[in-house]
Length: 356
Image 1 (cartoon, rainbow, N blue to C red):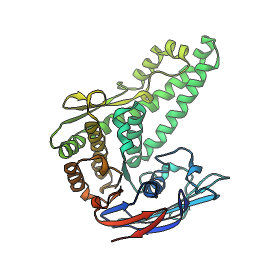
Image 2 (tube, helix red, strand yellow):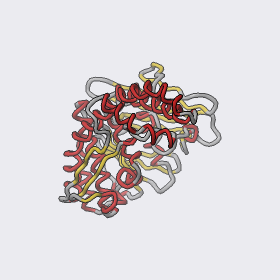
Image 3 (cartoon, rainbow, N blue to C red):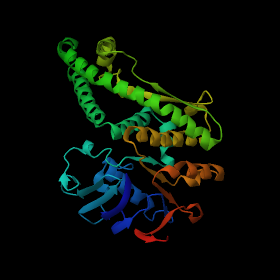
């Protein structure tokens, strides 16, 4: 599935814009703060249903305006897809796909699969397990909508269990009903753990291959560090064993909401001992491995977005990265026209100009 065109109004610093894209590389070039990242944010928002920069969707509406709208058109050899998102300051957003109103954002996920990488994605390697869980969740959800809704269910059950733990200082009252939430949490948690373990097992060899290619030889090892149970009974047993601690703290300390991914470079943990260049390459390799995982699941490569990545790479890595990404439609933002490939779109103060 390739993105053919994007039309948006009152989005960030754009009053109105419409642009068509190449099926190969699309280079978005301009000085800082002109709207390059805003444009790819619009693409990401239409495909994923959320921004990679903010959880406050009203921030996406152009200052001084009351609404914003994005229309993204994509197609492959057998079908076309139109996603239209409308944002309003005074009411909830509206999402339409092929003219039909979409009430659940999970129904949009995976219709136009994308992989996004920017220097901020270094968080995937360096920061808390939450970043790595988010990585797993977005990727799995794009090829498995049941997982997305299963995850939503788990989070609601977890919230209810935590509320119960904090509801009263009387332990006996909590014990009367907590079994209900333990069983529900285990039923969802075991399935999530299996999906994540399988995902990491699939992505690991591709991440190693991508890292070796970009770094010119370094070995990357990726392992799932999460819930280690075989069935719901074992999951429930773990919850029961942690009850005293949970009751004291007022929240659930065991479960897939604490999952992580361990990342090693040449058998050394990248998070604590890798250089910044090695950490950046490892994070990029994980993202590039997503291309192959989604290709396996859907039969075609997703769209790849690289936001200001070239400025962080040496010339050798830039060349190897461009060769690696030649298999899919790619969007690259850069301030340096010397880094541009394919179709070049000049961006200046929220205005677009095709240069070639």
